[in-house]
Image 1 (cartoon, one colour):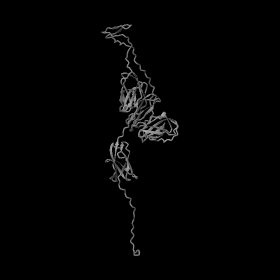
Image 2 (cartoon, helix red, strand yellow):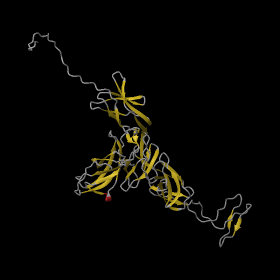
Image 3 (cartoon, helix red, strand yellow):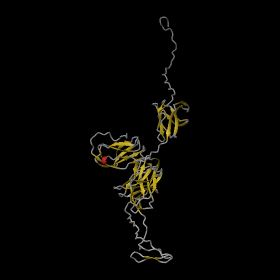
Image 4 (cartoon, rainbow, N blue to C red):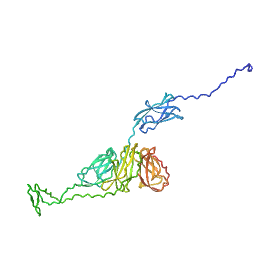
Length: 472
């Protein structure tokens, strides 16, 4: 190019390619653990998930101390989650470590210090003890009263009362059975009760009274004539009787003489008429395996009949059917996991047992010893449609409410086990048998309440919040 800007010569052209700027690879970053909270105390069997954030796509190795317990991948949103495996009880230091394709650790999170505690065994609700022996209305002989026996909640202290008078104490054994030797009681009628007391001596629950009678032991005798006295040395002794013929009693080597007295007739026990009761019928669900170790057994028999509930050859309890013939029983302590045979017997008037067919069932290995849910009866057993029904269930469980066989909806029990449920406002008026049923996340039955007969009245027309209510 000259001074005037005229091009005098040009170089050969050179072709080049301009590439877009490369996206920088994000620097390796240490992952962060956001849940559970530092210092959290987790319950064995219900540990939940470990969660946090990090660089999208990173592979994390999760460590408990120096031991790898699993792996997780950080998602496109930078979040990751890892279900806890089973961990031993005690302290744990959890870390999340970024590793490359060769397994080399690139970065490590701050340790999360937590502790694992064993799940507490729920304390069974206070329950009224049951007296199973002697039989109601029994006539006992003074000096040979035997034992009072029954069932109840393991470990409970019972005070035994005769009317209002305490006659002794007994502790219920680990198998839920108890036995108390009768002290001497006066002849006549007695009403015996067993009362559960707490550590301060306060009465928590009382059994149904057992009405029995005590009779004096009869001294067998025959009709004798007053004034007869044995002689000595084999010579008949003669003692004048008042206005009577002298009484003669053989001496040694003869027939022993009678002791003066009056005619004694031994007490006669009426012979009961047997064959009046029928075997009980089980009406509650008995689907195997049961995922509750304290299932509700309920059924029907003749009104007022006594029903004995056996687990194989072991007597669990004796209950009495109500005026409608309904009976029920919940084991006060958990039944062992494994196979069982339920045997139900009605007690006949002569004390014999009339058995129903045996019913095999199985308690699952993971069965929970939960108390069954309950329904609180409204005042007078009546409730307007749209109003709230209340009850109890295992804490934080989901309770499904039924009217007959129709599911009405669900409620959630609070931490204290209380739940409430608004009966649908369009439920037609009438009498219903309400039931509360608790199932686990897999749909397994964990417990059901006794039916609660409630009369539904027409709705008051007030707005409700719907069926699903928490126990708060």
